[in-house]
View 1: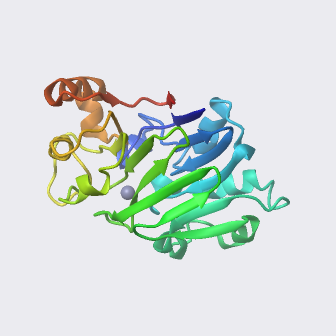
View 2 (view 1 turned 90 degrees about the horizontal axis):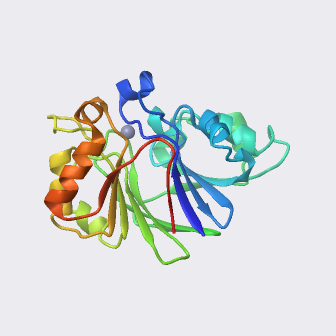
Length: 250
Ligand SMILES: [Zn+2]
């Protein structure tokens, strides 16, 4: 059995700073092996709250170096390696995240392996299989991710990006699409997706299910559940707004 647990659903500075939604990362559980995606602030706390044993995390993926995706990385590396006494875990991160020292240099040797994320590359870290997309359009080097589950499902994570034409093609194979929808309305110069962008994207794709998450303030004010419901009706697709602690199983 596989499960995805969204520990947090906050995106953008204000929602994270005020913790209007939790900014913890996402857990992917395949047969009791845990992968942690984007350990934002509070990840360690929410792992404990949800009774997810931190030492079960063997794989960490950081899509890009912004704090809402990486702030708890160091404390989690320390926890899973028992302060460096047990060499454990593989970390996948971008070249620029490594350069930005999101992982403190003294912790680097604690991990078994550090792998650099490159565009359009397949990574296999048993039991996890995933592929990066092209470079997304964001203010940091950032990739989208497609996770291949043993049950045959493909789950795409459209992480932080502005809209661009090839986005639909990059995620075409996803059965389930998780979209980091920071904004309700687009704003000039902001490299994040908004609801009109989501509409444009979904006009070109037909995933079985869409999950909106990573909400900024304009989305919170608009009520993500209502927005998802209306969008679902309009586009005749199964679209849900994520909430903190939501899980999907297959
Ligand atoms: Zn970002």
